[in-house]
Image 1: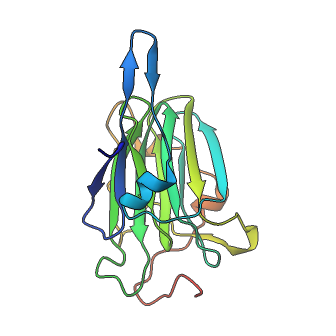
Image 2: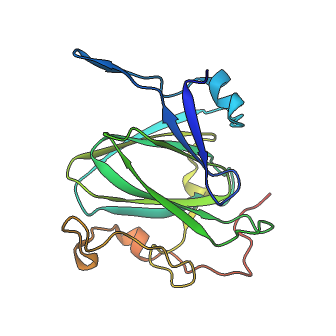
Length: 191
């Protein structure tokens, strides 16, 4: 029996992973990563860097990617909740420019596997939300890039007007406010 449940999305290779939770009156235990078990799910990655961020409610980070040294990511929330989004930027993909989003939380303990050549972003739904992710390549500041979070062509449905969130109240960095718009003609990654 696998220790992880896999749910495929409509975008090829984009996978929701749910760990098996072992709980009792003391608390719980779960594996968050096991190379052999993930290989059974078709995730054959060598993760080389772990990242951890903490944000207050209404923080929107993204949509980020690296033009070179593209990173696959395994993301999860250890405290709080986020609306997590991945956008397919693989030019030869039938879902190029399409997005998929889901809620990740400390309660549901879901993880989201985002392969290379995707843009990624999230919106925090609670204060003091802590977000962790494993990456398949190192961070290279000279290669960082992104697409504006509210691009009209992509049309992400962020969960505004839910749980007291309002679009006018989002907190976003100056860098992320100035990201480019999506273009169907553009090749986003250097191979």
